[in-house]
Amino acid sequence: MGQKVSITLTVEAANLQAITNPTQNDIENNTNLTDDNSGSSLDGTNANFTSEVFINNDVRWEGVTNDPGYVIEIQSVVYEPVNKGTSVDFFNAPVI
Image 1 (cartoon, rainbow, N blue to C red):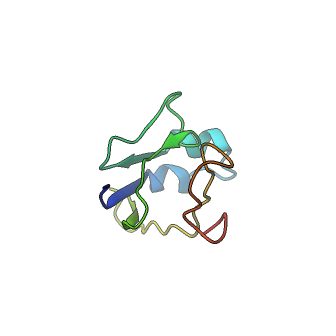
Image 2 (image 1 turned 90 degrees about the vertical axis):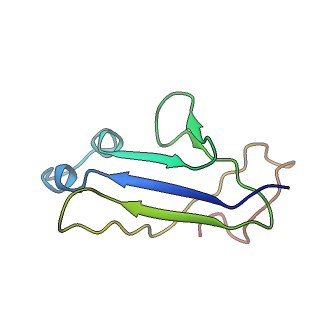
Image 3 (image 1 turned 180 degrees about the horizontal axis):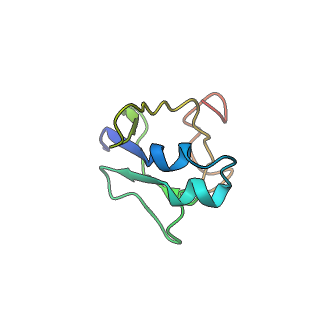
């Protein structure tokens, strides 16, 4: 059956803005992914965050920060199927 899923990217924007040339590690340490469907990352990194979404149901992405004066805008999402060849292709392009 499935359900709609909301995925949230939380950013410590002021911390990242203060770093002249942020590394991937800096970005990882100042961001967090969560969802309302028990999404998780086995190694605790955003790169390996997995969210179970359901075909024919909406997925809403939202960027947030608690830092006043900043707005978080998600520009793209990369789709990487877990089981290449057997996973359902949700999108018509790997980057949406």
